[in-house]
Image (cartoon, rainbow, N blue to C red; front, side):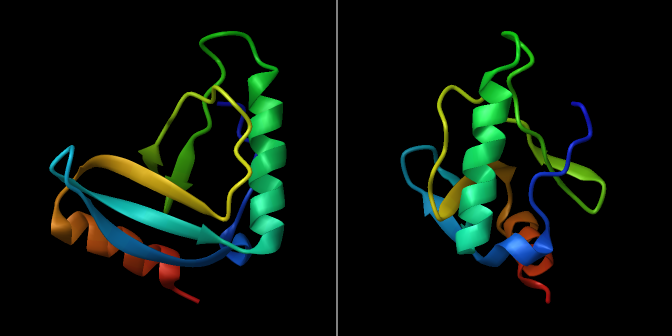
Length: 101
């Protein structure tokens, strides 16, 4: 992690809980604004240029790491699925944080 901040709260348009049947777990869908989508695409492109093993993009909220996925291709999407071993309560807390104005 180099500490670069690619996106912030202004780039998030909302979040919701999603049940992933195949994995039997809760996930959080993060919805991005048009600017957020562009910033995420730029961020993933930048991360791809790093050496193997250093090509991850850390998602931090309130100084807590939520996810640290390896980036294998540029991401140009208006939503991001954050998976983990979330309980329903943990997923709801994350949605609440991400949806706060």
